Length: 50
Image (tube, helix red, strand yellow):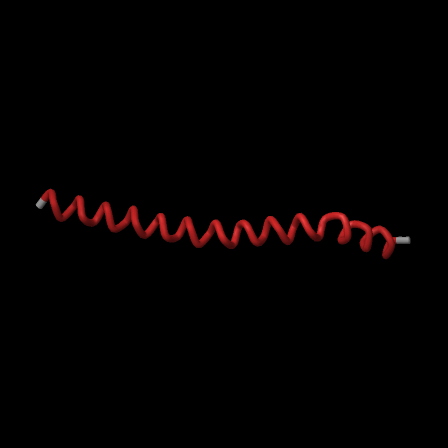
C-alpha cells in the first residue's frame, strides 16, 4: 500500500514540480542578468562622481 501512495503522489505532483523547477531555472538567468546590469550601473555612477 505504501508504494501505491508514493506512485499516486508522484503522478499528482510530478508535473507541477517539474514546471516550477523550469520556471525557477529560467527566472534565475533573468535575475542574474538584472543583477549584472545593476552592478554595472552602480559602477558607472561611482565613476561619474569622481
